[in-house]
Length: 184
Image 1 (cartoon, rainbow, N blue to C red):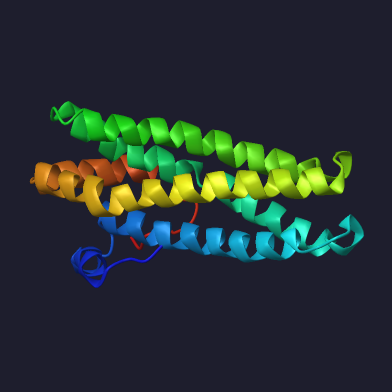
Image 2 (image 1 turned 90 degrees about the vertical axis):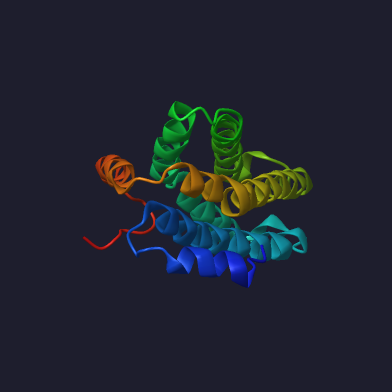
């Protein structure tokens, strides 16, 4: 995912502990995981025999576990979405929340497929992994792009008072962090 300099500059200009900047930075880490999945999946697709793929399967399993560990990130984003909905901006944040459900389902499907690798014929397994990876990658890419380029800008324009941002940040702190722990 290519992030424009203008968008990066917006997030970099926010205070280090601003929730939108934290979300953006976490997205970069999620994209790193997805890039690792892309390159590993590419190698897996070129591997003719399961016996030659143990390290690749392990690497994809680790990536899928890391993606599953991002649940608190999604829960914290929903703090923002709920505030947007409370301020009568309903459609975009609800679509993002529905995306979260789809992403969680796709992450679980990928993870469970990786766990079942010994129970599936090799060519069928590779095809399934590739299909699930592509589905997850493009859905996640689309979701992050919408957040970076639309949703977070809308929220920033909609929520003007520092008190609300502080309250939302405190709610996020109670949920916890999985990828990136902001400084106190």
